[in-house]
Length: 273
Image (cartoon, rainbow, N blue to C red; front, side, top):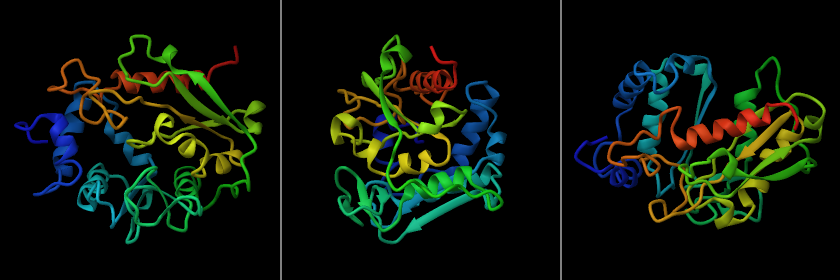
């Protein structure tokens, strides 16, 4: 990131629709290694064993495909095997989460609630890619979600109110997960996609719950609130939760949002109270 440009300005320009070159994957990779050496993040070598899904729509007018190309390049530099990295580029999609549901925006739209019907269920693709293998594919999704969508108080996970969380978060718990151990999948909503803005469209209407039902996955939907420094209700990618926004540290494992969401995940894995 250009050191002469304030992080908030860079986030809304260079990191989304750059006029010149896109942000550099090589620079990001060097920064990640530096952060790890300082103990601020985990060792990025662990990325090599992860399954990564990256997506871009050619009709996206919010985040250029040139920027997303650099995201995919970052994982290549991190030595993620090609077999573990899926980069799906759609010629038709806009800036949106993708579904196959007639109530959603037409494919190619760049408008609220930023959920486009492009003829496939992206949530299912993501979950299958991350958790399934050729030898052990996931079960087909349920026709209709049959578990329980729980609302919970997020304030307990951010006692200093430093993370800019909304008061309420959500977790979808399949019926099977009332009896057996389940994995936790975290879904971070996009900008202007929190429940306060689009209602329950992202937490009920994009397909995660149906595939979670049949594959022993609890789905956590943490929520960020809008504020004067975050008017679109985005998760922090420029430093609005940092003590010094001109020297952002939102990427650290102990940063407010990172720590709060990790506490939620740990609570879901703890014994019932």
